[in-house]
Amino acid sequence: MVAAESFSVPDDDAQMVIDPRFVSLAHRFFRMFARPARGGGALAVYLHGRPVVDIWAGWAAPDRRWRADTVALSFSTGKGVAATVLHRIAERGLIDYDAPVATYWPEFAARGKGAITVRDVLAHRAGLHRVRGLAATPDGILDYDAMVRALADAEPDPRRLRSSGYHAVTFGWLVAEIVQRVTGEGFTEVLRREVAEPLGVEELWFRVPPEQRHRIARSFPKLHVPVLRWDTASAVLARSRRLGGIAEAGMPLGFDVLVNDPRVYDAVMPGFNGVFAARALARMYGALANGGRVDDVQLLRPETIDRISRVQSRGRDYVLGFPLGFTLGYHRPPIASRRPIRHGFGHYGVGGSGAYADPDLGMSVAFVTNRLGNSLNTIGDGRLARLGAQARAAVSRLPE
Image (tube, rainbow, N blue to C red; front, side, top):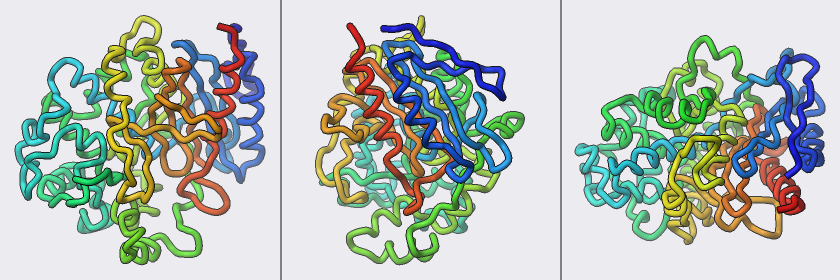
């Protein structure tokens, strides 16, 4: 592999890293953020446990450039981080994937949920996808304890027995509460000790330290569905037989406003409010793509990675309407290529951010941005899929 080169950044003391074979990837990335209306972002790539790309561009706010230390709200990207925390605990024998959740969280057994396993939760087969209506007020979902109680008292959707149903927001609370019940510690503390500190990164946040919040890029535009206001679209979709699950799982009332509420950075909502740096995500997944190891840190054992990266359900997801290839806490990453990523796993988020590991290539790719979606919709777009395809093309040309 050709050694990476460092490039000085005019308005920052830090340096970008671009392996010469990834120059075309860097050019594509920089073109994405040519003017303030496109916002900004960061891209990082690890290959065989080493950083080969660490770049950033654009604007964190209309009057503020994206810097080396800028971080971004990355939505469902956090599901993969939360799952990795759980796997660290499970690897020590403290969690059995096939044990009922109620083994660790007794109240969870209410309303016929006694047989739902940890594996079911990680594979989006717990039947608890509904977040719409879970809280009495729009900001009620910021109350972790209330949401956990509500989920413990919820009745599961019977369709869970046939296929997955994407738990767009509730996934994070379920995983976090299992971890908390097993360890007796707060989820964010376990995340810090089990993942962030061993990797030597700090920017894997669900609760952002107050002194670090000036680094968060301003997300824009406001979440919306084409033509309709958010709450109107949520109400309309909720009545649809075909699309109702999307509203139930990911469109609680007032969610579009809540996204930009500073209180989000005080909450523990691992299915939604992760704030990350691309290089932190790339390092975590870089270990998972490299037999679990980066530098002298063994994040997970190879046999664990093999286990958690297997697809659990291949049928049509009853929320999304199509199969996404859920593994244990992750999904197969879509890529703009004729060759799918066969054994890769990671998680994309609303707006376009995301990260994944590709063990076949020993590569991880992470992308965060504050520009939600594109001119047609804010829910998602193909930026990461295109960047991932170009990163793969660069790797395929590298000498062994």
